[in-house]
Image (cartoon, rainbow over the protein chains, first blue to last red):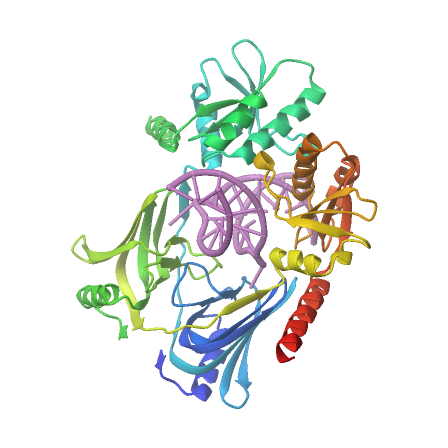
Length: 253
Length: 253
DNA sequence: ACGTCGATCTCGAAC
DNA sequence: GTTCGAGGTCGACGT
């Protein structure tokens, strides 16, 4: 940890941090250039730079969620003195070829630390989990629904989320979305249904399962003769936690 | 700037930072919970928390480009003591309703600073700029191409990038992509072309303009009777900088 | 407010 | 390696 270091002191510390694969936090006045998939320039201003142990690097402005410049994990991190008085950090990626250069003319502080984080991140109620909930409890779609397969491949048209049959034996194609459904998802489902119609000469129903159907997609859905089944994330969560409880009680005897 | 502060010291500093709308950087051992559009939990580990003056907050693990938890700008930031010995940071957003809770049991350091950054960020050669380049130099599409309108609305099918005519007076629909084109973009163009065919009973050509056409999209393109015109970002950049030079020389007289 | 679309998207999984 | 779809996507722009 250094406060108001000279460029020379900073250089030494950064080289140490990079070679030892430690996490670096740096606040200072800098400008930056990026050249690669696109190109960008950013003039002088106070920013925060974070270089992680996995050799990813982020440049954050004092506002906004997203970094203004960055390089993904695995890049090559270099540092040197530029123009005699500026500290230059270069982050180079080779595939695709991209270079980020950050020039500092003043440094507020540098912090170097070794962070240990082995914890498991768990995100609940994703589309995958909605599918599992339907697998456990097919009536979430409708009474008598019978799932036959999950993530079926249909060649150039991609995948359906669930294929099954309704109580009358009709083929049912299901598209699951965790977010309110717009035209995109309806068209996507339609492509699957069309692809299956080309293969099977039978009655086929297409159902979008999601928390909500957007108003602008309603007409399209009707025009394509598809259906919508509302399913809340809370409901999925309930089904999944019930399953979990059951597994625990089975385990306990 | 505080190193190894007590929970009480940290609390005071954070409350000051939040009320004064300053940038906060904090490294420590924490766990977190998120509930909102989805829900997530993350166990104990060393992480970096950044709370900005615009009341956005990021939680970074020691690896990866993306924050593991976050809250976008404008959220409500609160801090308190939880379970007698833990520092709790709550970040609450109301639309949509989302709550992020971060519990610290140890704090390595806290840095608070006022960052000033008025610089303009300039990103070069986006799709918008490719469109401008074609507007300036229509032969980038083909000899004799005549742009008629840009970003034309076609109701439920969305927008075309450029509408125009070729040298024989045929209507031309153009879809611009800055990245290699896959099936998605081809299908998107096809939707536009179909939508126009429904309105106009004339010969219509659909052209995808992009740096590259992916192999998997070639068959689909041919099957739908659409065309591909390669256009590199460099070429667009040249045209745009030439235009800029011209504007400067016009300005100089 | 909602809807649409681009992004240096990132990330992961499947092939 | 490439390709593809999901994301608490974010952010910008339009209605």
